Length: 154
Image (cartoon, rainbow, N blue to C red; front, top):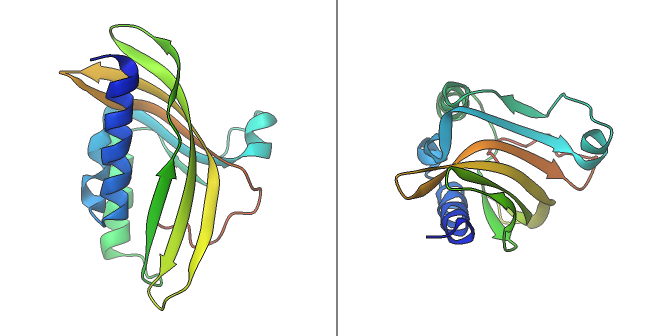
């Protein structure tokens, strides 16, 4: 299977996992030494390293999920992701880099539905046994204003 198809399938499962509330499975889309960051377009453009969410391995992602399930208190809500087609920038037999636009709608437990975030995924994938695992994901949000209820991963 080519890089575009592997990445498209991985991204489809990734957003399905988040949107359907299967958050404990979310870290399984990442390589063990993965890096995950959520930042703004302005900070990314300026090369500022800090992120709103920052994890430099899969264990940190699992810790985030544990905190979401056990420690954090937040208003119930869900997401619905809409993804553009991934643009594969480079590829080899071992992996690929890609960029994918996204739009996330947030559905609050009490009813309102709002545009929550838009932006792009800047990804590095490794291919392992016929699947694409995220080695590096930088989530670049278009807006410099991030809602304080960024609980679930983008």
